[in-house]
Image (cartoon, rainbow, N blue to C red):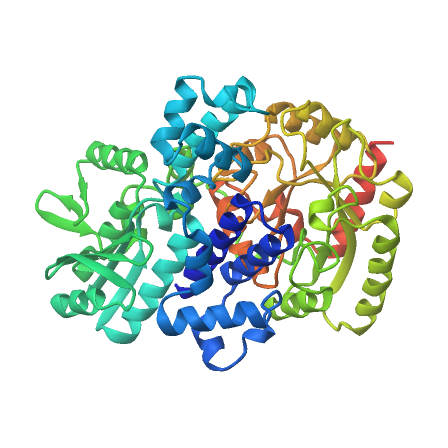
Length: 572
Protein backbone atom coordinates (compact mmCIF):
# COMPACT_ATOMS: atom_id res chain seq x y z
CA UNK A 1 0.00 0.00 0.00
CA UNK A 2 2.92 2.39 0.72
CA UNK A 3 4.10 1.89 -2.87
CA UNK A 4 0.85 3.38 -4.15
CA UNK A 5 0.85 6.17 -1.54
CA UNK A 6 4.31 7.31 -2.52
CA UNK A 7 3.50 7.07 -6.23
CA UNK A 8 0.52 9.37 -5.67
CA UNK A 9 2.66 11.83 -3.70
CA UNK A 10 5.41 12.02 -6.36
CA UNK A 11 2.82 12.44 -9.11
CA UNK A 12 1.23 15.23 -7.10
CA UNK A 13 4.63 16.94 -6.68
CA UNK A 14 5.07 16.75 -10.46
CA UNK A 15 1.58 18.20 -10.93
CA UNK A 16 2.37 21.11 -8.64
CA UNK A 17 5.69 21.85 -10.33
CA UNK A 18 4.04 21.74 -13.75
CA UNK A 19 1.25 24.01 -12.52
CA UNK A 20 3.87 26.53 -11.39
CA UNK A 21 5.70 26.29 -14.72
CA UNK A 22 8.95 25.00 -13.21
CA UNK A 23 11.77 23.05 -14.89
CA UNK A 24 10.42 20.25 -17.07
CA UNK A 25 13.29 17.88 -16.15
CA UNK A 26 12.32 18.06 -12.47
CA UNK A 27 8.74 17.23 -13.42
CA UNK A 28 9.89 14.24 -15.49
CA UNK A 29 12.09 12.95 -12.63
CA UNK A 30 9.17 12.86 -10.20
CA UNK A 31 6.88 11.29 -12.80
CA UNK A 32 9.45 8.57 -13.42
CA UNK A 33 9.82 7.86 -9.69
CA UNK A 34 6.04 7.64 -9.39
CA UNK A 35 5.81 5.13 -12.23
CA UNK A 36 8.59 2.98 -10.78
CA UNK A 37 6.85 2.84 -7.40
CA UNK A 38 3.43 2.24 -8.95
CA UNK A 39 4.80 -0.76 -10.89
CA UNK A 40 6.93 -2.07 -8.02
CA UNK A 41 6.06 -5.59 -6.88
CA UNK A 42 8.29 -5.61 -3.78
CA UNK A 43 7.32 -3.64 -0.66
CA UNK A 44 9.08 -0.26 -0.70
CA UNK A 45 9.26 -0.33 3.10
CA UNK A 46 11.27 -3.57 2.97
CA UNK A 47 13.60 -2.17 0.30
CA UNK A 48 14.16 0.94 2.41
CA UNK A 49 14.94 -1.04 5.57
CA UNK A 50 17.42 -3.19 3.64
CA UNK A 51 19.06 -0.15 2.04
CA UNK A 52 18.16 -1.31 -1.48
CA UNK A 53 16.27 1.70 -2.83
CA UNK A 54 19.24 2.57 -5.02
CA UNK A 55 18.62 -0.66 -6.93
CA UNK A 56 15.46 0.84 -8.40
CA UNK A 57 15.90 2.59 -11.76
CA UNK A 58 14.89 6.23 -11.59
CA UNK A 59 15.29 6.41 -7.80
CA UNK A 60 18.33 8.57 -7.13
CA UNK A 61 19.73 9.69 -3.81
CA UNK A 62 17.38 12.67 -3.51
CA UNK A 63 14.23 10.68 -4.20
CA UNK A 64 15.42 7.87 -1.89
CA UNK A 65 15.83 10.35 0.97
CA UNK A 66 12.31 11.62 0.44
CA UNK A 67 10.96 8.06 0.48
CA UNK A 68 12.80 7.34 3.72
CA UNK A 69 11.53 10.56 5.26
CA UNK A 70 7.92 9.70 4.44
CA UNK A 71 8.20 6.11 5.68
CA UNK A 72 9.74 7.28 8.98
CA UNK A 73 7.58 10.33 9.69
CA UNK A 74 4.47 10.01 7.53
CA UNK A 75 5.32 13.38 5.95
CA UNK A 76 7.47 14.74 3.13
CA UNK A 77 8.76 18.31 3.36
CA UNK A 78 9.18 18.64 -0.40
CA UNK A 79 5.54 17.71 -0.97
CA UNK A 80 4.33 20.20 1.62
CA UNK A 81 6.61 22.86 0.14
CA UNK A 82 5.47 22.55 -3.48
CA UNK A 83 1.73 22.32 -2.79
CA UNK A 84 1.81 25.31 -0.45
CA UNK A 85 -0.53 28.04 -1.68
CA UNK A 86 -2.06 25.71 -4.31
CA UNK A 87 -5.56 24.58 -3.26
CA UNK A 88 -5.65 20.76 -3.24
CA UNK A 89 -8.90 20.95 -5.21
CA UNK A 90 -6.94 22.49 -8.10
CA UNK A 91 -4.29 19.77 -8.06
CA UNK A 92 -6.97 17.08 -8.05
CA UNK A 93 -8.41 18.59 -11.23
CA UNK A 94 -5.15 18.00 -13.13
CA UNK A 95 -6.34 14.40 -13.54
CA UNK A 96 -9.06 15.65 -15.90
CA UNK A 97 -8.38 14.83 -19.54
CA UNK A 98 -7.70 17.85 -21.78
CA UNK A 99 -7.21 20.18 -18.79
CA UNK A 100 -3.52 21.04 -18.66
CA UNK A 101 -1.74 22.85 -15.80
CA UNK A 102 -1.34 26.06 -17.79
CA UNK A 103 -5.06 26.24 -18.55
CA UNK A 104 -5.92 25.49 -14.93
CA UNK A 105 -3.49 28.12 -13.63
CA UNK A 106 -5.01 30.70 -15.98
CA UNK A 107 -8.57 29.76 -14.98
CA UNK A 108 -7.61 30.12 -11.34
CA UNK A 109 -5.87 33.47 -11.79
CA UNK A 110 -8.31 35.12 -14.23
CA UNK A 111 -11.63 33.51 -13.30
CA UNK A 112 -11.16 32.55 -9.64
CA UNK A 113 -11.64 28.81 -10.30
CA UNK A 114 -10.84 26.92 -7.08
CA UNK A 115 -12.64 23.60 -7.47
CA UNK A 116 -14.54 21.39 -9.87
CA UNK A 117 -17.82 23.18 -9.20
CA UNK A 118 -16.23 26.52 -10.16
CA UNK A 119 -14.80 24.98 -13.32
CA UNK A 120 -18.19 23.62 -14.38
CA UNK A 121 -19.72 27.06 -13.72
CA UNK A 122 -17.28 28.96 -15.96
CA UNK A 123 -17.83 26.37 -18.69
CA UNK A 124 -21.60 26.84 -18.56
CA UNK A 125 -21.50 30.65 -18.48
CA UNK A 126 -18.98 30.77 -21.35
CA UNK A 127 -16.19 32.61 -19.50
CA UNK A 128 -13.65 29.76 -19.87
CA UNK A 129 -13.99 29.79 -23.67
CA UNK A 130 -13.04 33.50 -23.72
CA UNK A 131 -9.62 32.96 -22.12
CA UNK A 132 -6.56 33.28 -24.40
CA UNK A 133 -5.80 30.16 -26.48
CA UNK A 134 -9.12 28.52 -25.54
CA UNK A 135 -12.28 28.57 -27.67
CA UNK A 136 -15.44 26.45 -27.76
CA UNK A 137 -13.81 23.27 -29.09
CA UNK A 138 -11.22 23.09 -26.30
CA UNK A 139 -13.86 23.81 -23.68
CA UNK A 140 -16.09 21.04 -25.04
CA UNK A 141 -13.17 18.60 -24.77
CA UNK A 142 -12.61 19.67 -21.15
CA UNK A 143 -16.31 19.16 -20.43
CA UNK A 144 -16.11 15.62 -21.80
CA UNK A 145 -13.00 15.08 -19.68
CA UNK A 146 -14.92 16.12 -16.58
CA UNK A 147 -17.66 13.59 -17.32
CA UNK A 148 -15.11 10.80 -17.70
CA UNK A 149 -13.20 11.94 -14.60
CA UNK A 150 -16.34 11.80 -12.46
CA UNK A 151 -17.34 8.37 -13.77
CA UNK A 152 -13.87 6.91 -13.29
CA UNK A 153 -13.57 8.12 -9.71
CA UNK A 154 -16.73 6.30 -8.70
CA UNK A 155 -14.94 2.94 -9.12
CA UNK A 156 -11.53 1.29 -8.58
CA UNK A 157 -9.22 0.09 -11.31
CA UNK A 158 -8.90 -3.70 -11.56
CA UNK A 159 -5.21 -3.35 -10.61
CA UNK A 160 -5.89 -1.54 -7.32
CA UNK A 161 -8.82 -3.80 -6.40
CA UNK A 162 -6.90 -6.97 -7.21
CA UNK A 163 -3.89 -5.87 -5.15
CA UNK A 164 -5.99 -4.92 -2.11
CA UNK A 165 -7.99 -8.15 -2.28
CA UNK A 166 -4.85 -10.29 -2.66
CA UNK A 167 -3.22 -8.67 0.34
CA UNK A 168 -6.30 -9.22 2.51
CA UNK A 169 -6.70 -12.84 1.39
CA UNK A 170 -3.03 -13.52 2.13
CA UNK A 171 -3.33 -11.82 5.53
CA UNK A 172 -6.44 -13.81 6.50
CA UNK A 173 -4.93 -17.12 5.40
CA UNK A 174 -2.00 -16.50 7.73
CA UNK A 175 -3.99 -15.29 10.72
CA UNK A 176 -7.40 -16.95 10.76
CA UNK A 177 -9.02 -20.39 10.88
CA UNK A 178 -10.29 -20.31 7.29
CA UNK A 179 -11.26 -23.32 5.17
CA UNK A 180 -12.18 -21.63 1.86
CA UNK A 181 -11.70 -18.04 0.75
CA UNK A 182 -12.25 -16.20 -2.54
CA UNK A 183 -12.94 -12.72 -3.85
CA UNK A 184 -16.41 -12.42 -5.38
CA UNK A 185 -18.37 -9.79 -7.28
CA UNK A 186 -17.08 -7.95 -10.33
CA UNK A 187 -13.50 -8.46 -9.13
CA UNK A 188 -13.81 -12.23 -9.56
CA UNK A 189 -15.28 -11.59 -13.01
CA UNK A 190 -12.20 -9.39 -13.72
CA UNK A 191 -14.17 -6.35 -14.84
CA UNK A 192 -11.93 -3.41 -15.69
CA UNK A 193 -13.31 -1.29 -12.84
CA UNK A 194 -14.67 -2.39 -9.47
CA UNK A 195 -17.02 -0.92 -6.87
CA UNK A 196 -16.61 -2.32 -3.36
CA UNK A 197 -14.50 -5.46 -2.85
CA UNK A 198 -16.39 -8.59 -1.72
CA UNK A 199 -14.63 -11.57 -0.15
CA UNK A 200 -16.32 -14.86 0.77
CA UNK A 201 -15.03 -17.38 3.32
CA UNK A 202 -15.92 -20.46 5.34
CA UNK A 203 -14.50 -21.23 8.76
CA UNK A 204 -15.37 -22.62 12.19
CA UNK A 205 -14.98 -19.38 14.16
CA UNK A 206 -16.84 -16.69 12.24
CA UNK A 207 -16.55 -14.03 14.91
CA UNK A 208 -12.82 -14.72 15.24
CA UNK A 209 -12.30 -14.45 11.49
CA UNK A 210 -14.19 -11.14 11.39
CA UNK A 211 -12.15 -9.85 14.34
CA UNK A 212 -8.92 -10.71 12.53
CA UNK A 213 -10.26 -9.09 9.36
CA UNK A 214 -10.97 -5.79 11.11
CA UNK A 215 -7.37 -5.74 12.37
CA UNK A 216 -5.94 -5.76 8.84
CA UNK A 217 -2.96 -3.35 9.10
CA UNK A 218 -4.25 -0.92 6.45
CA UNK A 219 -7.70 -0.57 8.04
CA UNK A 220 -8.73 3.08 8.45
CA UNK A 221 -12.28 2.57 9.69
CA UNK A 222 -14.48 -0.35 10.79
CA UNK A 223 -18.02 -0.13 9.41
CA UNK A 224 -19.40 -3.42 10.76
CA UNK A 225 -18.12 -6.41 12.72
CA UNK A 226 -20.57 -9.24 13.42
CA UNK A 227 -20.31 -13.02 13.43
CA UNK A 228 -20.99 -13.54 9.72
CA UNK A 229 -20.14 -10.20 8.09
CA UNK A 230 -17.57 -7.45 8.48
CA UNK A 231 -16.93 -4.24 6.54
CA UNK A 232 -13.87 -2.02 6.64
CA UNK A 233 -12.44 0.99 4.85
CA UNK A 234 -8.77 0.52 4.00
CA UNK A 235 -6.16 3.10 3.01
CA UNK A 236 -7.22 4.90 -0.14
CA UNK A 237 -10.90 4.88 0.87
CA UNK A 238 -11.61 1.38 -0.46
CA UNK A 239 -14.49 -0.53 1.15
CA UNK A 240 -14.02 -4.26 1.67
CA UNK A 241 -16.85 -6.57 2.78
CA UNK A 242 -16.16 -10.04 4.21
CA UNK A 243 -18.90 -12.67 4.49
CA UNK A 244 -18.72 -15.97 6.39
CA UNK A 245 -20.94 -18.72 4.97
CA UNK A 246 -21.62 -22.35 5.87
CA UNK A 247 -19.47 -24.91 3.96
CA UNK A 248 -22.61 -26.60 2.59
CA UNK A 249 -23.62 -23.29 0.97
CA UNK A 250 -20.19 -22.04 -0.12
CA UNK A 251 -20.62 -22.86 -3.83
CA UNK A 252 -24.09 -21.34 -4.00
CA UNK A 253 -22.97 -18.21 -2.15
CA UNK A 254 -19.88 -17.84 -4.33
CA UNK A 255 -21.99 -18.15 -7.47
CA UNK A 256 -24.59 -15.68 -6.16
CA UNK A 257 -22.16 -13.02 -4.94
CA UNK A 258 -19.97 -13.31 -8.06
CA UNK A 259 -22.89 -12.34 -10.32
CA UNK A 260 -23.53 -10.71 -12.63
CA UNK A 261 -27.10 -9.82 -11.76
CA UNK A 262 -28.27 -10.57 -15.30
CA UNK A 263 -26.50 -13.95 -15.31
CA UNK A 264 -28.02 -14.87 -11.94
CA UNK A 265 -31.54 -14.00 -13.13
CA UNK A 266 -31.07 -16.40 -16.05
CA UNK A 267 -29.99 -19.19 -13.69
CA UNK A 268 -32.91 -18.61 -11.32
CA UNK A 269 -35.33 -18.79 -14.24
CA UNK A 270 -33.80 -22.08 -15.40
CA UNK A 271 -34.06 -23.46 -11.86
CA UNK A 272 -37.71 -22.43 -11.68
CA UNK A 273 -38.45 -24.16 -14.99
CA UNK A 274 -37.09 -27.38 -13.49
CA UNK A 275 -39.16 -27.10 -10.32
CA UNK A 276 -36.15 -25.95 -8.29
CA UNK A 277 -35.31 -22.84 -6.29
CA UNK A 278 -31.86 -21.23 -6.48
CA UNK A 279 -30.57 -18.85 -3.79
CA UNK A 280 -27.32 -17.92 -2.10
CA UNK A 281 -27.92 -20.86 0.28
CA UNK A 282 -28.19 -23.58 -2.38
CA UNK A 283 -30.49 -25.27 -4.85
CA UNK A 284 -33.69 -26.56 -3.24
CA UNK A 285 -36.21 -29.19 -4.29
CA UNK A 286 -39.02 -28.23 -1.98
CA UNK A 287 -37.30 -27.93 1.39
CA UNK A 288 -34.52 -30.35 0.52
CA UNK A 289 -31.07 -28.99 -0.48
CA UNK A 290 -29.93 -30.76 -3.66
CA UNK A 291 -26.81 -28.69 -4.46
CA UNK A 292 -24.77 -25.86 -3.00
CA UNK A 293 -21.40 -27.04 -1.73
CA UNK A 294 -19.58 -26.22 -5.00
CA UNK A 295 -20.28 -23.98 -7.96
CA UNK A 296 -19.84 -26.94 -10.28
CA UNK A 297 -22.77 -28.68 -8.52
CA UNK A 298 -24.97 -25.61 -9.10
CA UNK A 299 -24.40 -25.54 -12.85
CA UNK A 300 -24.58 -29.33 -13.20
CA UNK A 301 -27.99 -29.68 -11.55
CA UNK A 302 -29.32 -26.92 -13.82
CA UNK A 303 -28.15 -28.87 -16.88
CA UNK A 304 -25.34 -26.46 -17.73
CA UNK A 305 -21.62 -26.73 -18.30
CA UNK A 306 -19.64 -24.85 -15.67
CA UNK A 307 -19.44 -21.19 -16.70
CA UNK A 308 -16.11 -19.47 -15.85
CA UNK A 309 -16.64 -16.27 -13.81
CA UNK A 310 -15.26 -14.02 -16.59
CA UNK A 311 -18.12 -15.04 -18.91
CA UNK A 312 -21.01 -14.44 -16.51
CA UNK A 313 -22.42 -11.30 -18.16
CA UNK A 314 -25.48 -12.72 -19.98
CA UNK A 315 -23.83 -12.35 -23.39
CA UNK A 316 -24.73 -15.80 -24.67
CA UNK A 317 -22.83 -17.88 -22.12
CA UNK A 318 -25.99 -19.49 -20.71
CA UNK A 319 -27.13 -20.68 -24.14
CA UNK A 320 -23.61 -21.98 -24.89
CA UNK A 321 -23.52 -23.78 -21.52
CA UNK A 322 -26.88 -25.43 -22.26
CA UNK A 323 -25.48 -26.74 -25.57
CA UNK A 324 -22.14 -27.70 -23.94
CA UNK A 325 -20.39 -25.36 -26.39
CA UNK A 326 -18.55 -22.93 -24.13
CA UNK A 327 -15.11 -21.90 -25.40
CA UNK A 328 -11.96 -23.39 -23.87
CA UNK A 329 -10.68 -20.06 -22.59
CA UNK A 330 -7.05 -19.05 -22.77
CA UNK A 331 -5.09 -19.34 -19.53
CA UNK A 332 -2.05 -17.37 -18.34
CA UNK A 333 0.04 -20.55 -18.59
CA UNK A 334 -0.70 -20.66 -22.34
CA UNK A 335 1.15 -17.39 -23.01
CA UNK A 336 4.58 -18.01 -24.53
CA UNK A 337 5.74 -14.41 -24.85
CA UNK A 338 4.98 -10.71 -24.58
CA UNK A 339 4.57 -8.75 -27.82
CA UNK A 340 4.95 -5.13 -26.76
CA UNK A 341 7.38 -3.56 -24.29
CA UNK A 342 9.86 -0.70 -24.00
CA UNK A 343 13.48 -0.41 -22.88
CA UNK A 344 15.79 2.35 -21.71
CA UNK A 345 16.50 3.09 -25.36
CA UNK A 346 13.23 5.05 -25.25
CA UNK A 347 11.19 5.77 -22.11
CA UNK A 348 11.44 2.64 -19.94
CA UNK A 349 13.20 2.21 -16.61
CA UNK A 350 14.46 -1.27 -17.60
CA UNK A 351 17.32 -2.26 -19.88
CA UNK A 352 16.80 -4.95 -22.51
CA UNK A 353 18.89 -7.37 -20.43
CA UNK A 354 16.74 -6.71 -17.38
CA UNK A 355 13.58 -7.27 -19.40
CA UNK A 356 15.04 -10.49 -20.82
CA UNK A 357 16.08 -11.84 -17.41
CA UNK A 358 12.65 -11.08 -15.96
CA UNK A 359 10.90 -12.70 -18.93
CA UNK A 360 13.03 -15.83 -18.53
CA UNK A 361 11.97 -16.09 -14.88
CA UNK A 362 8.33 -15.91 -15.97
CA UNK A 363 9.03 -18.79 -18.36
CA UNK A 364 8.58 -16.95 -21.65
CA UNK A 365 10.11 -18.20 -24.88
CA UNK A 366 10.31 -14.77 -26.54
CA UNK A 367 9.61 -11.06 -26.07
CA UNK A 368 9.29 -8.23 -28.59
CA UNK A 369 11.29 -5.07 -27.91
CA UNK A 370 9.14 -2.34 -29.47
CA UNK A 371 10.53 1.03 -28.50
CA UNK A 372 8.99 4.27 -29.74
CA UNK A 373 9.86 5.65 -33.17
CA UNK A 374 11.69 8.89 -33.93
CA UNK A 375 8.75 11.36 -33.88
CA UNK A 376 7.89 10.45 -30.28
CA UNK A 377 10.31 13.05 -28.87
CA UNK A 378 8.50 13.03 -25.50
CA UNK A 379 9.40 9.33 -25.15
CA UNK A 380 12.98 9.61 -26.46
CA UNK A 381 11.95 7.90 -29.68
CA UNK A 382 14.68 6.18 -31.66
CA UNK A 383 16.05 7.77 -34.82
CA UNK A 384 17.36 5.11 -37.29
CA UNK A 385 20.95 5.28 -36.03
CA UNK A 386 19.93 4.37 -32.46
CA UNK A 387 17.45 1.75 -33.71
CA UNK A 388 20.24 -0.06 -35.57
CA UNK A 389 22.46 0.21 -32.50
CA UNK A 390 19.69 -1.40 -30.45
CA UNK A 391 19.38 -4.24 -32.94
CA UNK A 392 23.13 -4.92 -32.73
CA UNK A 393 22.79 -5.14 -28.95
CA UNK A 394 19.83 -7.52 -29.36
CA UNK A 395 22.01 -9.78 -31.56
CA UNK A 396 24.65 -9.87 -28.82
CA UNK A 397 22.10 -10.58 -26.09
CA UNK A 398 20.53 -13.43 -28.07
CA UNK A 399 23.94 -15.13 -28.17
CA UNK A 400 24.07 -15.03 -24.37
CA UNK A 401 20.46 -15.91 -23.50
CA UNK A 402 19.78 -19.62 -23.00
CA UNK A 403 16.00 -19.97 -23.16
CA UNK A 404 14.66 -16.64 -24.41
CA UNK A 405 14.66 -14.99 -27.84
CA UNK A 406 14.58 -11.21 -28.16
CA UNK A 407 12.64 -10.09 -31.23
CA UNK A 408 13.57 -6.87 -33.01
CA UNK A 409 10.64 -4.53 -33.39
CA UNK A 410 9.31 -1.01 -33.11
CA UNK A 411 6.16 0.77 -32.05
CA UNK A 412 6.07 2.99 -35.11
CA UNK A 413 3.89 6.09 -34.98
CA UNK A 414 1.10 6.56 -37.51
CA UNK A 415 1.60 10.25 -38.22
CA UNK A 416 -1.11 12.88 -38.64
CA UNK A 417 -0.80 12.77 -42.44
CA UNK A 418 -1.17 8.97 -42.46
CA UNK A 419 2.50 8.17 -43.14
CA UNK A 420 4.49 5.84 -40.91
CA UNK A 421 7.34 7.26 -38.85
CA UNK A 422 9.97 4.97 -40.43
CA UNK A 423 10.64 4.11 -44.07
CA UNK A 424 9.72 0.71 -45.50
CA UNK A 425 13.45 0.04 -45.79
CA UNK A 426 13.68 0.05 -42.00
CA UNK A 427 10.33 -1.61 -41.27
CA UNK A 428 10.97 -4.65 -43.46
CA UNK A 429 14.04 -5.46 -41.35
CA UNK A 430 11.98 -5.77 -38.15
CA UNK A 431 10.92 -9.17 -36.87
CA UNK A 432 7.54 -7.62 -36.03
CA UNK A 433 6.17 -4.11 -36.54
CA UNK A 434 3.65 -2.59 -34.12
CA UNK A 435 1.93 0.54 -35.46
CA UNK A 436 0.00 2.97 -33.27
CA UNK A 437 -1.40 6.47 -32.93
CA UNK A 438 -0.03 8.83 -30.30
CA UNK A 439 -0.97 12.17 -31.85
CA UNK A 440 -3.91 13.71 -33.66
CA UNK A 441 -6.59 11.69 -31.84
CA UNK A 442 -9.44 13.40 -33.76
CA UNK A 443 -7.88 13.56 -37.23
CA UNK A 444 -9.02 10.83 -39.65
CA UNK A 445 -8.03 8.08 -37.22
CA UNK A 446 -9.98 5.32 -38.96
CA UNK A 447 -8.46 6.17 -42.33
CA UNK A 448 -4.92 6.47 -40.91
CA UNK A 449 -5.08 3.09 -39.16
CA UNK A 450 -6.59 1.49 -42.27
CA UNK A 451 -3.78 2.91 -44.40
CA UNK A 452 -1.21 1.55 -41.96
CA UNK A 453 -2.75 -1.92 -42.27
CA UNK A 454 -2.27 -1.73 -46.04
CA UNK A 455 1.48 -1.43 -45.48
CA UNK A 456 2.99 -4.89 -46.04
CA UNK A 457 5.38 -4.49 -43.12
CA UNK A 458 2.80 -3.65 -40.39
CA UNK A 459 1.90 -6.72 -38.34
CA UNK A 460 0.06 -5.35 -35.28
CA UNK A 461 -2.08 -2.30 -34.51
CA UNK A 462 -1.46 -1.31 -30.88
CA UNK A 463 -4.19 -0.13 -28.46
CA UNK A 464 -6.62 0.28 -31.38
CA UNK A 465 -9.21 2.57 -29.73
CA UNK A 466 -6.71 4.68 -27.77
CA UNK A 467 -8.71 4.76 -24.58
CA UNK A 468 -7.39 5.26 -21.04
CA UNK A 469 -10.00 3.87 -18.65
CA UNK A 470 -9.36 6.47 -15.95
CA UNK A 471 -9.11 9.55 -18.13
CA UNK A 472 -9.67 9.24 -21.89
CA UNK A 473 -12.49 7.86 -23.99
CA UNK A 474 -10.22 7.19 -26.94
CA UNK A 475 -9.91 8.20 -30.57
CA UNK A 476 -12.71 9.28 -32.88
CA UNK A 477 -12.72 5.89 -34.58
CA UNK A 478 -15.03 3.48 -36.40
CA UNK A 479 -13.77 0.29 -34.78
CA UNK A 480 -15.95 -1.95 -36.95
CA UNK A 481 -14.38 -0.54 -40.12
CA UNK A 482 -10.93 -1.03 -38.58
CA UNK A 483 -11.80 -4.66 -37.83
CA UNK A 484 -13.06 -5.24 -41.36
CA UNK A 485 -9.73 -3.93 -42.66
CA UNK A 486 -7.80 -6.12 -40.20
CA UNK A 487 -9.72 -9.19 -41.36
CA UNK A 488 -9.09 -8.28 -45.00
CA UNK A 489 -5.34 -7.71 -44.59
CA UNK A 490 -4.59 -10.33 -41.94
CA UNK A 491 -3.31 -7.64 -39.57
CA UNK A 492 -3.35 -8.57 -35.88
CA UNK A 493 -5.03 -6.26 -33.37
CA UNK A 494 -3.54 -5.73 -29.96
CA UNK A 495 -5.04 -6.35 -26.57
CA UNK A 496 -2.94 -3.92 -24.56
CA UNK A 497 -2.67 -5.51 -21.11
CA UNK A 498 -1.82 -2.31 -19.22
CA UNK A 499 -4.63 -2.18 -16.66
CA UNK A 500 -5.60 1.42 -17.51
CA UNK A 501 -5.93 0.57 -21.22
CA UNK A 502 -7.21 -3.01 -21.69
CA UNK A 503 -7.66 -2.05 -25.31
CA UNK A 504 -9.29 -3.81 -27.13
CA UNK A 505 -11.95 -4.29 -24.47
CA UNK A 506 -13.93 -7.49 -23.90
CA UNK A 507 -16.84 -6.56 -26.18
CA UNK A 508 -14.57 -5.64 -29.09
CA UNK A 509 -12.48 -8.77 -28.56
CA UNK A 510 -15.55 -10.98 -28.91
CA UNK A 511 -16.44 -9.15 -32.12
CA UNK A 512 -12.89 -9.59 -33.42
CA UNK A 513 -13.03 -13.32 -32.66
CA UNK A 514 -16.30 -13.63 -34.59
CA UNK A 515 -14.65 -11.87 -37.55
CA UNK A 516 -11.67 -14.25 -37.52
CA UNK A 517 -9.12 -11.61 -36.43
CA UNK A 518 -6.09 -12.77 -34.47
CA UNK A 519 -5.17 -10.90 -31.27
CA UNK A 520 -1.74 -10.00 -29.96
CA UNK A 521 -1.40 -9.44 -26.21
CA UNK A 522 1.30 -6.98 -25.13
CA UNK A 523 1.86 -5.45 -21.72
CA UNK A 524 3.30 -2.18 -23.08
CA UNK A 525 5.65 -2.53 -20.11
CA UNK A 526 7.95 0.35 -19.22
CA UNK A 527 9.58 -1.58 -16.35
CA UNK A 528 10.30 -5.21 -15.52
CA UNK A 529 7.31 -5.34 -13.17
CA UNK A 530 5.13 -4.17 -16.04
CA UNK A 531 5.47 -7.63 -17.61
CA UNK A 532 3.23 -8.89 -14.79
CA UNK A 533 0.33 -6.92 -16.29
CA UNK A 534 -0.14 -9.89 -18.65
CA UNK A 535 -2.64 -11.30 -16.12
CA UNK A 536 -4.97 -8.35 -16.78
CA UNK A 537 -4.69 -8.93 -20.52
CA UNK A 538 -5.42 -12.64 -20.23
CA UNK A 539 -8.39 -11.99 -17.94
CA UNK A 540 -9.81 -9.50 -20.46
CA UNK A 541 -9.20 -11.99 -23.26
CA UNK A 542 -11.20 -14.56 -21.29
CA UNK A 543 -14.02 -12.02 -20.85
CA UNK A 544 -13.91 -11.67 -24.65
CA UNK A 545 -14.35 -15.47 -25.10
CA UNK A 546 -10.85 -15.89 -26.57
CA UNK A 547 -9.21 -19.28 -26.88
CA UNK A 548 -5.55 -20.12 -27.49
CA UNK A 549 -6.02 -20.24 -31.26
CA UNK A 550 -7.31 -16.64 -31.22
CA UNK A 551 -4.10 -15.27 -29.63
CA UNK A 552 -0.82 -15.25 -31.52
CA UNK A 553 1.44 -15.24 -28.48
CA UNK A 554 0.18 -18.66 -27.45
CA UNK A 555 2.08 -19.92 -30.53
CA UNK A 556 5.80 -20.76 -30.73
CA UNK A 557 7.89 -18.08 -32.38
CA UNK A 558 8.44 -20.15 -35.53
CA UNK A 559 4.69 -20.20 -36.18
CA UNK A 560 4.38 -16.47 -35.54
CA UNK A 561 7.12 -15.69 -38.07
CA UNK A 562 5.50 -18.04 -40.57
CA UNK A 563 2.08 -16.36 -40.07
CA UNK A 564 3.71 -12.96 -40.43
CA UNK A 565 5.17 -13.93 -43.82
CA UNK A 566 1.77 -15.11 -45.04
CA UNK A 567 0.07 -11.90 -43.87
CA UNK A 568 2.71 -9.67 -45.43
CA UNK A 569 2.32 -11.58 -48.68
CA UNK A 570 -1.42 -10.81 -48.73
CA UNK A 571 -0.70 -7.08 -48.83
CA UNK A 572 1.73 -7.04 -51.73
